[in-house]
Image (cartoon, rainbow, N blue to C red; front, side):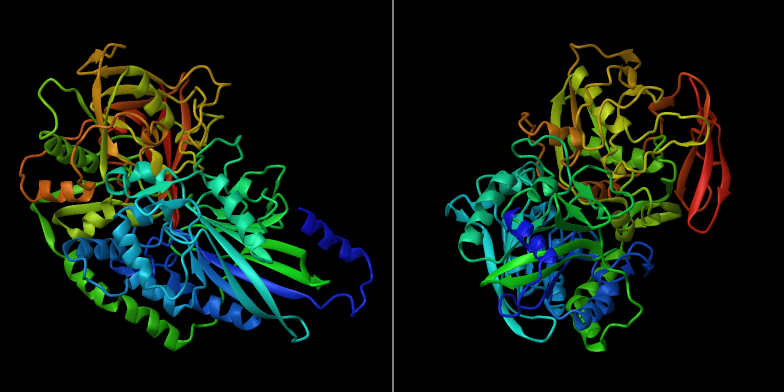
Length: 625
């Protein structure tokens, strides 16, 4: 912190013009977790999105660049896939790896003159070759400090880069500034994609790698060192290989600022959890500027430095982290055309593919209340996995399936309402985040741990009108288990915190009365559980002996199933949310058609619509034993 301290001293003393130069403002804008949301097309509903899409920020970025001379744009990963257009690129690449010369997604970033990027964990989902082919078309460098090529025993990408910039000070004088970037991706990426990455690349601890890369960059003459971290904030004690390290990166004396992602949060924001070393007003962690822009192009974050050069050395006089305010100034027409031309051919091909019918039968399915009970959609997904697993299990195996029923709590993109029609590829893209399945043999204690981790999606009652759903919980980490029956007692506090760590102060869990085929399970029982590789329990048990169940994505398994079957199971609710004392709670959902009258388990909860506006529907729900 010595450099920053010296810079702050200059505020309180008079400086001769022969002694120090004028101020230079440097701005680094950042995107993260775009997940291929380049345009504002909502491919699920075939409409325009009001909230998402990088294209909606082009005018703001251009205006900021005009107003602030020394401005650079970076990306911190999870760029290549996640919405239908990115997934379609992967689909076509897997059919023919010569499908494109330059990735449509990377082409779009080229059009916006990005300065540097680092990959995120999802950018490895389709393997190293796809990642390298995609980024090979970039007009900007890629930096990655904690991944090496196993065969070559060298960094997959440079562990740091230094960009020499001709910056202009506040009176128009030019200066040379050397900005270094390091890039980091969670080592958990290997767990998520073991079948595609093992024996090809090696991931290292992010903090150790950051220490090494930042030190080398500083010794190589860097004036500023910026960490591009596909890794969120975790203030718990440091653990080797921890997944979210942005907080501790800011503590590194060789790092001047942190731009980060991965957890889909916005920092700084009013939702940021207070901590003694986090300053929400100034957007700082350990007095270093830091920022995170959420997901899907919903925001662009920035860090700004005011620098002063004294005796040939750049000193940081002030800094801050923040989110850009979206401007009404339209983007330059040629920029919009350049970006759209990057994705146009792929988008035309995609839209033809999305409208293709994939099921033999017509369906009536919805998922409005899938956070409080299994519905028709969940049942259909479970059927497809059971059918797939016939090739990997025998009749004596006790098979359980866990599905995350809701990708986003606050987004009507993921509300499914299909009435008496065949399913299309558009529906499948709305239903799934494409992911490979994993399977593990588990016992009673592991099942309890799994369910306890998921149960903290529910708040404990604090008087009537408490929201049932904890909005700080990422609903895509909610994984109920189908194949068992069990109770979730929300009168008890959660055993696990929102990061999946055990809360040792809580002794009594929420999960009880776990039964298989009506019989309470015992410590001697053994089960096979199948779920997305992203299930939190799998992440916490990365060294467990996973079973070989092939290498199929959930969306492909489901597509094959509904294109070849006519008979499906009827929905059965297998878990109950209970409370020691009867309590009225609120269930707030994105505004959509009211389905409470037809919700299959309505009689279990006494559910009724209380109020609604254009965005939200608020239900009253009675929880009791």
